[in-house]
Image (tube, rainbow, N blue to C red):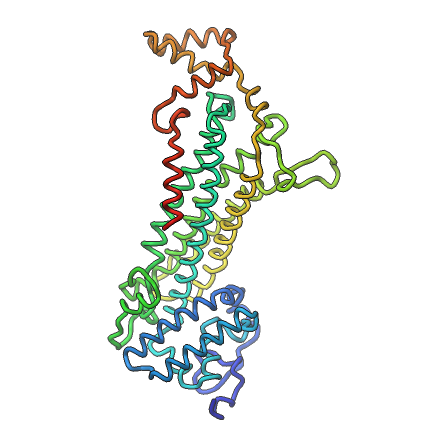
Length: 447
């Protein structure tokens, strides 16, 4: 490092300072930063990844020398090592992870730190950093969702023909099975995975780096090769749209999270109902229950209640991002940094909810005796009417006859199972196609 680099402390240096270090009003500096540096701390590995890819491109175009590229690789490796050891910490003066990394490279390796930002803006730098971050987080969500789907389909197979009441309007309606109930959430999660795959592959997995501040640069950079170096599926083309897509794509990521959480919310709501003393389809295991500080008998499934609430939080995070990008003209806006908080929170809550629901499903065991005792005769009224239809009576006449004689309906266990297995249409209680679902999950897990 040359002596000229010592005329001010590197920690005070902003990337936008010109002739000298200036003292920014501390209140303004704090307000500008907000909580952004907390999120940027987690983004450091992805910014390092983006800087290495960018360095490779600069070398191809003669802006960096071979030796400078070697220095860049060494410097970025040092940052990564320090980061993993918890020694590369963001401070308020750093402003953002981009500044901290560039200042480190400049302080330790001189010219490479000064050259790495050639034709690059923090505008496209944060875009690519966030894309790399979201790509990894969506891979994690994919695996967690598949794990939960796998556990649910195994439970569906295990309890495939255990009868249980089905509800409409919160009232007993028709007979179904535990297998059908478990299986319904498998298929819901698979739909969520289809959305996740589309958003991840088609929206997130495109490279905005090289678009500069949103208006390109006077260099003939091969951005497609840069995309390959960074393992992106393709290059995001239009430089203005690269900037305009900030918030739009993050919002779609949280739309995926919202849909996953809606599935978990439904499952959690069912479990809270099914574990009440009045219904008692499931016992609450000790390893997932909490108690009361005053009532010795209480066992509560708090985790399911929190999943319900955090679904609302994730949806609110998604809406906050949408509100952030409303009514802005094309181009970069500093308030885009406020997108990080809801994105990080939504992703964190979704991943945590999937993990904890997996534990709950693995722990819960159905109370088969209680469920069967709840299979009261009126549940089979519609099936009795269908039996008359099969003997030639019109459905409406059968409906009227059964409805007028509800007190005369009787049923036994053997007849219940026979009725449930008669539903052989696709997705019916007698044809859940669970093996097909299991194979689909295995295929997705191997990809």
